[in-house]
Image 1 (cartoon, helix red, strand yellow):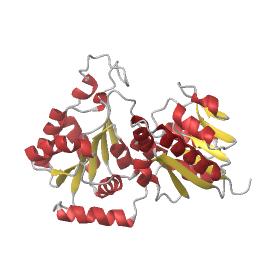
Image 2: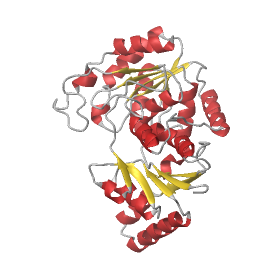
Image 3: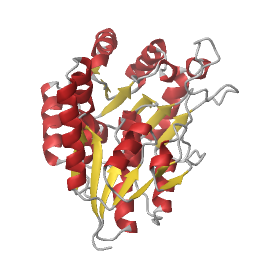
Image 4: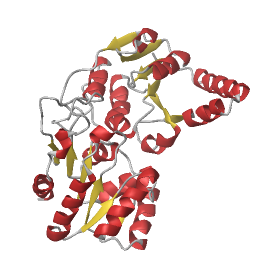
Length: 340
């Protein structure tokens, strides 16, 4: 096969895209000379578009399609879907790598027209739309499923990485200067999508008190626009810098790359710190922790209770003991270790 054209599908979310970021280089190691195209949801394009292993990015306009469906513009929706499928087919993909493991992503893989379709066995039975499927390994290794996918393709090389372009770094620098944020700072990432992954706000408040008393640098809170109100409350109460909703996704990554360290829950920004080699303390509770990472300066705090990980089926009547019982002094002690 001369210069194979390969489609990589990992649509979302931030953390999974970060962990899957080693796949383009793995694909090129397995298929020398390959042209790699990454298909990703529109909000996450900036995560992958500067990757030197990615030759082209296709944005999946999921939000636009949902908007058309909600407004009952079915003819416009049909035309949008048809045009998207035509765009995929015009690329003439030889191989499609389905790294999501869901029906929607497997269906897109099938619609791409690629004859060879590689991906995961899934509970949704989406692997029936593939030509090759592997089971996700049970492992405490960072990005273990994507590493297994790389090995299935014949590549032992797997190194997750994120590329921050100079323009993004310059925009971040202007924000830091405008906000008068000191050169040395620790990033806090308290926010995530599911309640069973949250470290309680009172614990964050306790940690901030410890940091302000014993850490000489500044504290910066990161998050999305929906987190800004809660972050503002923390910032007003403690006098720290609140950038939740003030930075783009790419700028947030640049901020993490400049930080002395990061403390965060099981969320994409925390995983990004590991990939960017920023010292990090990752707080896990109801979700499976990774204990082996590509960074020697990532520390995972995990209580390993008998009920953990419960994932989406908590048995504690929403007490979330696995996270509530992680104390602020323990997190501060762990942070001291990575700061050294």
